[in-house]
Image 1: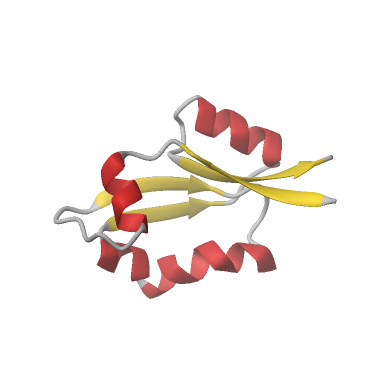
Image 2 (image 1 turned 180 degrees about the vertical axis):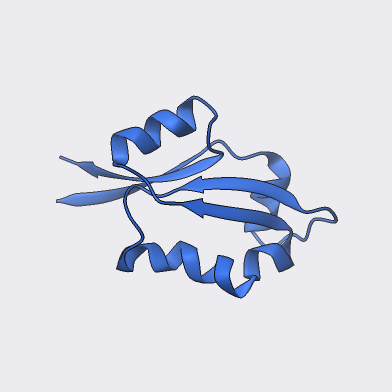
Length: 89
């Protein structure tokens, strides 16, 4: 069974923006996927491409990952603000 885990070390303004609270200034957020740009990544890529995040305040950039372990490490070390990883049992 696969479970998706959403990792984040988000600042308060970025968290508020994700819940629809509009920020006055643009907040940059670096987001790392667990793998390449494939179908499941559309959930994150389409709002960036359409400008939905930027309109709400955060300036989100999404990068392709090299695996869930690397995504966890890069968020933990602060290289990325948020990440997406797959956990297997």
